[in-house]
Image (tube, rainbow, N blue to C red; front, top):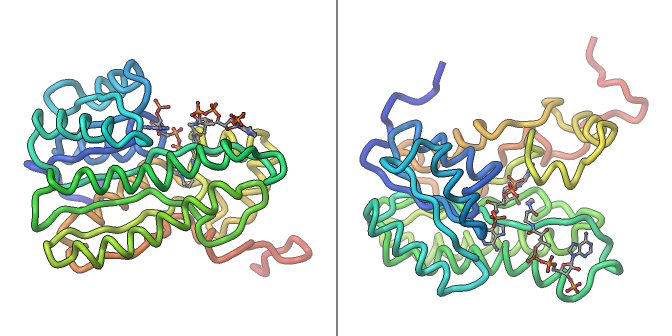
Length: 266
Ligand code: NAP
Ligand code: COA
């Protein structure tokens, strides 16, 4: 059964940076399914248009091309979206890049590229969307990751970028709270059928190894991240700002395996 009432988000509008695939597209579908009009933006225009069709077509979705590293490109996409569906009640910043490489196998440009997409991109999206927000009441959500808190081998760029995102959310929550704008993050655990996990766990063995460490012993779903975004954007979360919500099956707690491989359960 759907945990949310039908049309919970009717009359609301959302902009989702990086909403053209994966987890962020899952969020877009979840919001649209509850009556929200959504604009999704990514670098590839065909992919963006395809995502909008998948969400439900021109009445409820708009696909836009935008590179979050370029402030003017973000401004233009936000303006087109606001002109089409009106001011935003929900803005999600989820564009990201990742590859697995040790720091010594990473050029300065490789490090900078990921920080630029994830961290600078989130600043750009949140900074540029402010003038288009329905205030008070708007909900801003950054998509971060466990690497923000737990140092991870071969993820220097992502760890640095996502840690920056978490703290950026806290600062913006303080600065923009007085105008009724809430700023939170969602930190997904390993999510099934995503580009991120294809890169981080490319083999069945690697996937099994990750699942074994998660207290809930499975990958999460895009719908589960979508549900968290709905919660954070709903009235139920009206007093929540500056928080990072872990939606990760308990992954953040640590490696949930005992030394001998048993789990202590009967
Ligand atoms: P994904 O499918 O590759 O999604 C990335 C999105 O960002 C795509 O829509 C991509 O579209 C867009 N994008 C990339 N660079 C961009 C840029 N410079 N400007 C604008 N858009 C850009 O990845 P995903 O695995 O679902 O990850 C989505 C988010 O969840 C990311 O923030 C990631 O860090 C986070 N996360 C994922 C997992 C996981 O299990 N997958 C776990 C924790 C956190 P274009 O390529 O067309 O630009
Ligand atoms: N190992 C080491 N360095 C790598 C690398 C790898 N696997 N992949 C890319 N790089 C380096 C490149 O060599 C380049 O550095 P250089 O100019 O010094 O050679 C730098 O990163 C930028 O690469 P480029 O391909 O020009 O960047 P881009 O802007 O076209 O793409 C990426 C950005 C690299 C993050 C690309 O993987 C991407 O578009 N990712 C989006 C999808 C994604 O990652 N989804 C998962 C989200 S969790």
